Amino acid sequence: MTGDAGAPRPGGQAIHIEDLVGAVVADSSGRRVGRVVDIEVRPRAGWEVTALMMGRFGVLDRFDTLRAVPYRLRGFGDEQVVAWADVATFENRRVTLRPGASPSPAGGEATSGTAGERNPTQPEAAE
Amino acid sequence: MTRPGPDRPTALRGALLVRDVLDAQLEGADRKRVGRVGDLRAVWSDDGQLRVTTILVGPQVLLGRLSYRLRGAAQRVLGDRFAHTIPIEDVEEVGPTVRLRGRAETYTVAAGDAWVADHLLRWIPGSGRSRR
Image 1 (cartoon, chains in turn green, blue):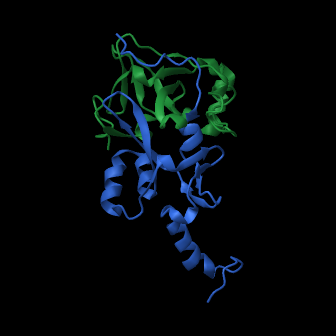
Image 2: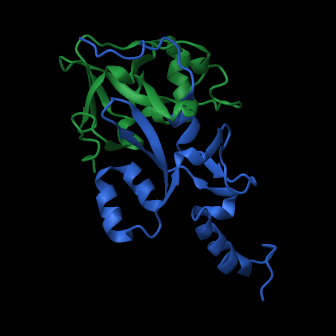
Image 3: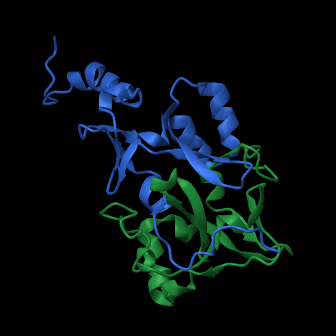
């Protein structure tokens, strides 16, 4: 159920990460800006969620092996991220951003190539 | 107005939950397999931080991934018999596998696999387990 995912605001609410993945992201006016395809965390900082990675290819983003195809064809630079600090609400599997917040282009080495590649080293080695 | 907080990320660092953790093989410190990460539970606290707290393993977790509507039904049918949780603090390393700090036998998740091996696989010729 998404009762836990239906928390309109924080307050010790439990969230299943699987509910967050695939959720629609909308800005404060309700305009859809993408879907959550991955979630960035900092394991060495108490597994804090820092950003939502958004994709444009719906269910293709969920399949590692297929995911590379559209991004290779269209360029991975299309992918965008939104800081978790910019999230206002998460209810009914829909993420709404705070007023004035908007996604920014993803960059950096961690997303180069295909997102299906496993990081062979400690994930935070780059930090 | 955007709530004060960390600067908007321009580069992704750290681990990615879908890429690196969900569905990943769990293994103990002794490199024995424990199970697979089915889902993760996180808590959104009053200070606005969302932190992953628990690894969820078990068939009802997988049903919940098919559809969140199945989560309640799976809970009613299966109860907590096959559900297992592992504190996220037990994760030692995230890489090709998710390695835990404890040995495999310390996690009840592995008990189901051990039961299958001891009671079912032992009857298969060539399994390496003698029939007593």
